Length: 307
Ligand SMILES: NC(=O)c1ccc[n+]([C@@H]2O[C@H](COP(=O)([O-])OP(=O)(O)OC[C@H]3O[C@@H](n4cnc5c(N)ncnc54)[C@H](OP(=O)(O)O)[C@@H]3O)[C@@H](O)[C@H]2O)c1
Image 1 (spheres, rainbow, N blue to C red):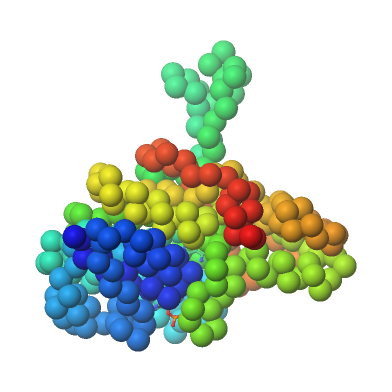
Image 2: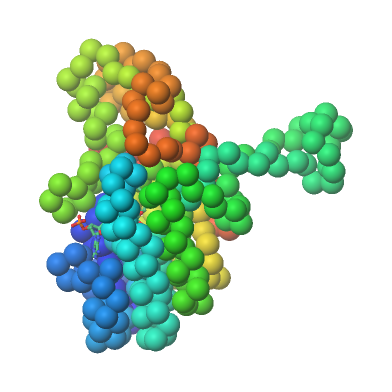
């Protein structure tokens, strides 16, 4: 039996991880959230994990207030502690206890301007030689793409990735984007985009949605199952990109949401300037997965979620 410690267990992703692993009798699940451990305190982390001796540590805890940590230096310091340094403390404890560490990161470690791949053998960028015929580049950021965050949140998450890789060899860093699922259990937990837009659609005759920020939604339940699949299969350690298949902008997502929910509200596509926010978001941040079987489309996952 594997002893698995899930931290951030009341979060949107954490709660699905707990349910998923509890279904399998081969795992003994220990679920901790903020009241059980503060991951930003190194000594506490070392002591509590040393006492618990898990075989696997999953860190689903994070600071996710993207705009708040852009506006305030104090908040950025908190973000750096929770997203940046704390994963390093967990990695050190994983090493000391010979445990595997699973840690989650984000598409916001990228700048939103992916390189456009050339067909194999093409040595120039003309886009017109015979090698380009029928070539459909997969545009986005793969696991080896160079991170270059454009927001404080992205910077804090990148520090976390580096701290994990520096302090333990047995790690999985899983990048995801646009998480959705049942709201987290904590007080003041954020609702996901689809829940917010469902309510807006029911209350208003028309809504505006930003037709930018192309990336892939990630259904929390699907990600939890995929995380377990990876651990069960003992996949090689390293960085993974896990999202649902098919990319879209926020506007395209609302169109599909209202179609599925049979909401007739008019949807107006707008550009990002209509909703100015403190933190910059990547314009295009599709995470390309070259290592795992792809997950189902976010549209299918959304259908299941709406049920
Ligand atoms: N949400 C997204 O769209 C998104 C996108 C890309 C990547 N991700 C990543 O996916 C992972 C899961 O995100 P999520 O949305 O499920 O997070 P979440 O719902 O915000 O849950 C995080 C949990 O961690 C707890 N926590 C925060 N600080 C802690 C600390 N110092 N010590 C112990 N626990 C602490 C939170 O408690 P409180 O509620 O009390 O703060 C909360 O219960 C994170 O790594 C996140 O960065 C999320």
